[in-house]
Image 1: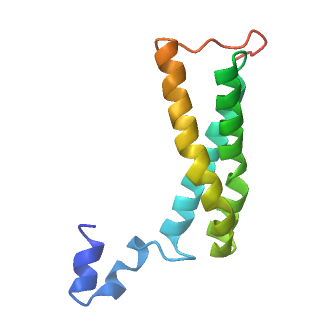
Image 2 (image 1 turned 60 degrees about the horizontal axis):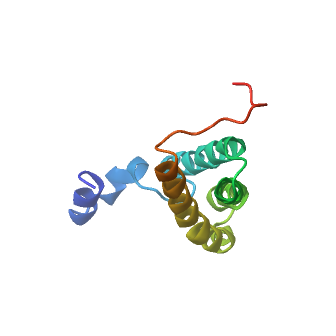
Length: 120
């Protein structure tokens, strides 16, 4: 914001080329990779939640968020039309998993019990 916007306002938008998130640009690809790694992290965290009904809901919401990675990658690297598929899923799943995680951590005083068959 401190670099790109002043360049655009002053009429030098061509000098901000690599700093803008345009489709097909470098920063757009980095942004897409960031969301991809977020989805992989959410999928990786899902097996940690087992047992109680709350933990099962958390696991399913983490899996739903992780499954959204496929249309997100398609949005960044193929066509932005895939955002129509991803936006409703994430509009529900991200707030839901955030609230469920807050409830689980409050209930357990911040401790997560690992499944007995999970080897780290």
